[in-house]
Length: 439
Image (cartoon, rainbow, N blue to C red; front, side, top):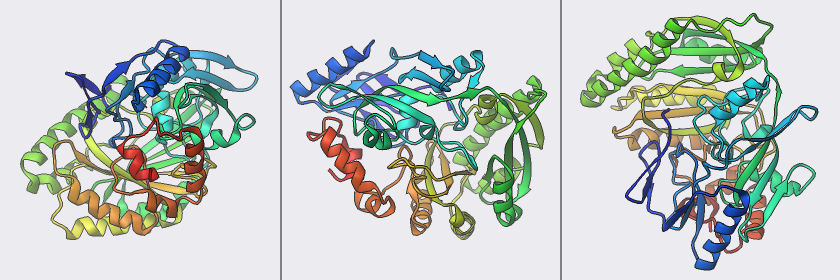
């Protein structure tokens, strides 16, 4: 993914081009006190308040016609506590900058998503995740939060301090307040060996449980209109460090995965009947490779081809059936899908509105190239996901509402009750939250 959202003529737009908004005013506070004062002034003026990161959510979760808070001056590491194994970081810090800073200190997060362009607060508030047998989302690695609430007060929370807020605010959707700092659990930097290889779709489905059990991190991409996947297994390694050769990395990650893939999508958008043939070529473009490097260099990769995305978490035991239904739907439909389907996993966690809350989960993400009609594909996919009680990623396109979420999240009422207490006047409201939370 490229960098950030854009703002022109007072209009804010997200990275994927799916959302735009015209806030009444914007602020870029340089301190927590300035941010709290801005929230109080907005309350006096009757304006709703939203904070926005780099705009990598495809939903309107950060859109507002009131006060838009940009946190890019609230960046950097506040504190490293090696004894406790934690780092406290300002909420506007991009994950890329955090990972680079931690590496310089000989430290690392345990798990990461597949990009690192988002801010710390944006990534955690929407439930950004990678893949892991035992290690969960970025939010599950949080040990403490600092939050500016609707009345402009600053609240700190952890398992011991305001634990009911901590349980919810790690993935708070921006509904409980504005996060100003996050304390993460970290560990000494380690090495991961990545094994990437093509594999038939039928084999991945047949052996999925075994792949999941035998690898710390397993994920794969299925290419619609084909029976092909690319798989990736990441496991801790004693070394030595053997990164991808720079030339091989450029060919695979820039020339093929971004440059050639961009051209292929341009052709597919102009000539949709060509997409199945393009998919067969694309699915065979990358050959197997194995490399060993520090975590963020293994977990993340550049994503420069713009797209729109829907992703659902289904119970892990329902994954294979879900995928087979998705493949059958694509095979029998006139749809032409040029982007691969991404599949990852996460263990159950204890965060109130985490997509993995209380259940081991598998994530199925469907994408369409930016500028191509996606509604038919996403609607058909969503029917399959919801039939398995899927939970949509909070930052990716979906059509679900509060009535649905109250059924698939056993602790949904806890979150809305907490919101009633922290923000009774709905200072942090917008249309998206009204739909997904009910009021």
